[in-house]
Amino acid sequence: MKNSRFELSHTDKVRRSIYVFLRDELERRLITIGLEEPYRTCLGKDICYPYVDPSEMKPKKKEFSKESLVAKPFFVIFTEDTIEEVHQKYIRFSESNKVRKDTIALVPDIGLHKSFYSSVRFFERDTFFEFLKPLLDVDYCILIQRDHRFKKRNRYSLTHFHVKIDWPISEAAEDLAKELRYISKSLYEKSERYADTLQQKLFEYYGFHHQASGGRRTAALIAAQYLKQIPGLGTVYISSSETRTITRYSEKGVARYAIIQLEKEYALQTIKAYNIDLKAFRNGYVLGESGNCFDLILFVSYKHTEWGLPPSDGKLRILKPDYSWLAVDKEMILPLPHAVNQSPLPIKWVYRS
Image (cartoon, rainbow, N blue to C red; front, side, top):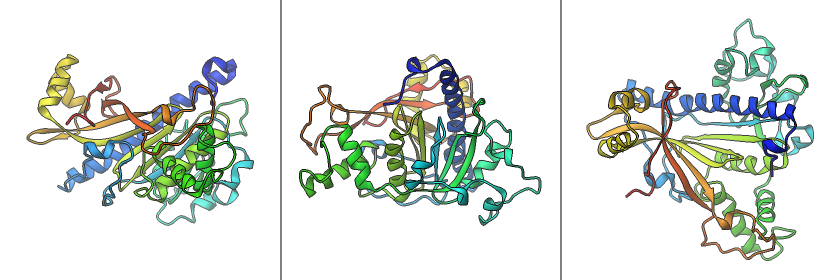
């Protein structure tokens, strides 16, 4: 369990505030890169965008989907503190994949300016996102963390790229099962079948189905489970070309972003309920529109059910596979990234029909 702000020193509260502020900005930019820009590309080339439908935002979706050719897949870890070297066994960051001019130069199709300087990787630089964007295309993970060399300053930087997550699925499942009190010592303490079910439920806990999750999504949820062992907050972002969504794992739980088509009749009822002018709605929320629908960015947050939370009495319990560990919590239409004065609009969409 991560410490709340109430449990932090004043110095750590300041760091937490800086981290949360930077995370909000990172999230806003990743939505632009991962959702809005592919949408604009389709619009410019007169290609039909691969919208997400309600069933795809339900927890534990089982169906396989065709990969989108326009999606922008990426995998980002952003931590509040510095990850210590002891964790390199499972999170593979070292001098060989540290962000330096010589290591970046080895990556094909990454253009480096002659004026490349080491501070370009720091979050406070105006060029940070210009530097980050092409690195998102590199396989595996991008690591952004506090730079430990500046102990008296809370400076965050993109420290490593091409970061592999090597924690075995079985160990991640065992760690979660102990946390939720389905086992006491070992994943296989009851039976191999019981252990296999717990590994499947690990995927459900993080909003995916074990049979329909590719390597990047699997690595992301394993990373999210592993980050529970590291002091401070940790956030994982995963964009998948198969799901056409951006998923976020953080201390707030599981959340997902997607571009959807919302019927105009229902949209108009919503904006009327929140006393929003149609013109303001179009300018602040609508990516595009067709005859009957608005194209919008949807945010869905999920909550863990009682079976996906540690029991209040702390006692061991029996796994019941049919009981869901994750459920939809909140659904909101998000303002476009440039509409900084607009607020999200709550709706009901995933289970509406």
